[in-house]
Length: 265
Image (cartoon, rainbow, N blue to C red; front, side):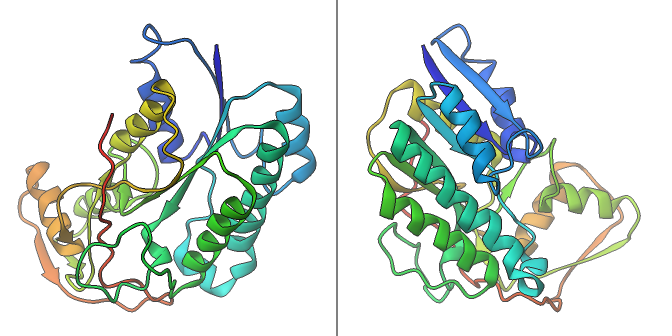
């Protein structure tokens, strides 16, 4: 019996994982323990140690993260607490208990100055506080563990769950006749269902290709392109999409295409 703890189970990826595991229940014996931020606050080291030492987990999937990029610029300590310090605590207990950690990271660890897809060993250089906090989390894991998967992804969205670009565009389209979306940022939208299946496949096949992985969608596009696709996909009429930049507190990578994509196994 493989036992898996999922931290951050109420986020969009956590919920997609809960949906996806139902397809595998008859194929392999895995005991899943999904815990939301109230049940397992990764910033509380005492709680982490108590829960994890009580149970015999083989894997921990860390979906817990502080993802408010704009607010992180104003209060970086909030991002650090979750994305760095909380990850450090998880890595520490995983080392003690010999647990494989699967951690979700981001394209924002790069500065976006490249014009070709980022490889896993490319130099990191985050340009905002969110990216800096996520990179610190990566470093804590690498400094402590040998059995880990750091999965960098980009432009993650779910059609069903969470606050993301896809769902925001649909919401705005119900009340606005014009949408302003920038074409100055390029990346690869990633369906959270696909990422969930990839994570599960790592566990089912007991993969030992430890280290940093990149996983994202296969189509390169701008936010403007993605907005058009969402409108067309949902057959929304009488709405105008304007190619226009908008002011943000946080700097964002202009190019955040991740290369060396890992396929679903």
